[in-house]
Length: 600
Image 1 (spheres, one colour):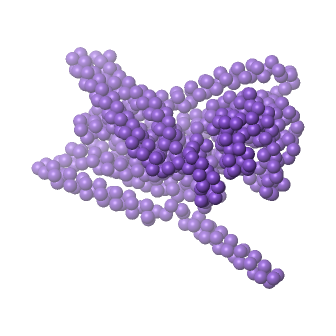
Image 2 (spheres, helix red, strand yellow):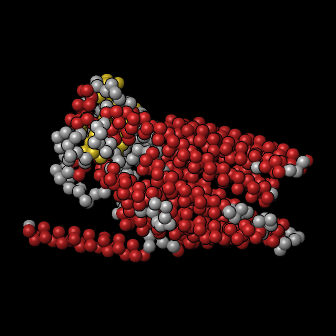
């Protein structure tokens, strides 16, 4: 059973829901009815529970302002979500009709309904006309121009807009490396040892672009009004559980879980599991090298076109296995992080990101490090990097674009056939009730986690080892261009519309990319030290070569950290505007205080 919430709950002048704020899908024929979000309950949900929730939503709210034209659509939906999530139990002991769904004063009603399976999902609705305009300016016209980030932010919120802004920035930042890589590949392709100049460029490139992105991100956040946004007080996660106890911060009874018990789960279960997975990844890598040796021996015995093709088969199989292992590990990491029972969503996300990044980094790059620094085979390194990069991009495009599109198209066809049987010949647009049912069956967008993870790995391939395969940047640019269009299409037509996520930056991913850039500096310096051109300057002493390489690497790292202080995160003109805004606010406050003193 579906119920829609009108925009009045968020932006009406009175600040309270009007009569009929929630109504059944079939009763939404009023021309003034403009739903922004949907609550979907189980088909056998008891009427008394729905009536109780309706009464709580219709309860008097604090007065608010008229949001027409002032708030973006994404902000309106975010407010609706906030209002629903802050509905709290008063003197109820359980959800009416469900004695097992216990409540206590201050408990979030929506979170309890979700955790007990009474409420299936809560999602915002697409706006047909707004979506058409956004789609047309975003991906329906193939053009060489910037993305409509302001429109994306208006429709989806700052979190989504910042992701697409970073994707666009990263793509443009790769262009100089791609332009340098094409002639470098063409003229030095057979001489893998001449990679010193490209490695030096890598070191400078990965240092500069992340510092400049922070300035670009600050400019966008200031333009959207989130740069100085204070972090909201976090409520417990829906899945958090524990023994009911007194919380001195909120001054109410809440579930409490001992931090010592959580730490035991992390260090005695989660950490050993991650180490076991890293060992399995290492074992699979050794099997891959055995396959490489076998293919090479077959080719040496009988060189031919087909045995030449056989040389690439182990890398392709290994790339597919890497993607499969990453996928399986992701589900295991989510299960473990959920089992650790983190109270706050931010803590949950940080632990999940750490688990996933550590394994993905080791799983994707361990073989390349082994080839580069143990085997010291630059020909095999170049071949493996190219195969891993191309295979992973093909698999990602299939899993992220073609497969979801095909599945959603099948679901849409089934729904449209059902609708057409009930529609009158004059109807041109899908009725609101059918639109709600159609969107309820769409795939749920799980956030930007996987999108940032993919960019993180691509950044690693380019910054770590592209000096031995200069076309890596070209391949990543092509991938990112297709990623923009495929992600835009998915957001508009494959996934449910997500609730807005107000953000001032890309969060923990900024730290992840900066960590990768530090590793890239060390890796490229080591590759430079291994090159025959540099070794020729130290023909008699390998120790001197190592010492000079380490000294240069330390100097570059020092230079990198100095740059973080020399290049301000916020551009000067925005700092001035923020200072001016603070000054004007203080002046206005002084005038108000003086006026009150004069009146008294």
